[in-house]
Image (cartoon, rainbow, N blue to C red):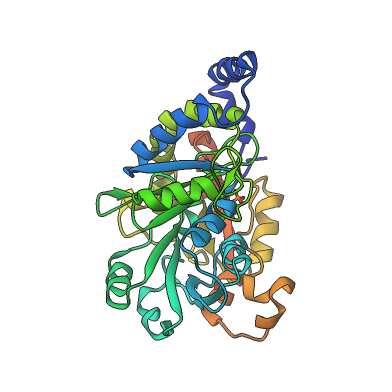
Amino acid sequence: MIKFLDLEKVNNRFRTEIDNRVKTVLDKGWYLQGNENDNFATNFAKYCGTKFALGVANGLDALRLIIRAYGFGKGDEIIVPANTYIATILAITDNGCTPVLVEPDIKTYNINPDLIEEKITPKTKAIMVVHLYGQAVQMQKIWDLAKKYNLKVFEDAAQGHGAIYQGKRTGNLSDAAAFSFYPGKNLGCMGDGGAVTTNNEEIYNKIKALANYGSDRKYHHIYKGLNSRLDEIQAAVLDVKLPHLDDDNNRRREIAKYYRENITNPKIILPQVYDEKAHVWHIFAVRTQNRNEFQQYLTDNAVQTLIHYPTPPHKQEAYSEWNNLSLPITEEIHNTIISLPMSPVMTDEEVKKVVEVINAYD
Ligand SMILES: *Cc1c(COP(=O)(O)O)cnc(C)c1O
């Protein structure tokens, strides 16, 4: 079976170094808010090109903390793509804000910037973009709208570590960005982890306090905060893996290029890219009319696939108030999308085999 993602193989490449770094943490006996966090935050900020980065407990918390730090709440609207992973939406509703769902561009799967302006109201506070599947959103129109209407821009960069738009990396394309280091992400730890990046010192300090019980110094609480920290072991693992992220992303690009040049089956719609550097291929998603049949065919031919995602947020039970909303492009994507094997550890033979199997499908 060609695995969708062989995580063990991904991490075993760095096993010796990870073992050593984890041992250092255990030997020191310091588990939270220590050197490993400081080092990793410094290195991750440098990588993204931002002034600040802060490790937090997971990607959802990173998103929640950003909205909270800007003080958005009940009555405030945040514009967001309708076809995102549900965490983006949960972060908005968790803060009491109203998500305003915008249809994606069916070619890039990212939010369609041309459909945003009509959704802006006097209650709109921010636009939350999502670099879905690893492709950086084309931000220019969004920046222009934000300027025109005085809105904040946030990034859900949980799938886009390292992607580049206009010479800048994700995490550095907005007021504040959220990353996830869930094990399967392009930069993943060995449990839960996340980060916020920003160039705004005041917001950085506020998020740092909010993530630590609202405390700016010990036993002194200035906000009604939460507890959301990256532990030292995860920070150490991430610090080992970060220097390899660009190589890993380049390998993903090679595989994606091979898929795009060699999958010729007319039943398969390939993803579109506006610039090679803009995409880090967290997911290589294609579309096809009989998706379930196609997935079964691939399984029968030893190719493992996943669906990102089978049900859009507005059709989830958790958001029953939206269940009757019609978002035809989002729904079309969710009904036809399927993710092919993609990871930096796939061999050339595996990549070739996937293409052969797909081209033989009829
Ligand atoms: C993974 C992911 C999240 C959530 O990250 P966690 O670390 O799992 O909380 C948020 N948004 C998107 C787009 C994701 O892919």
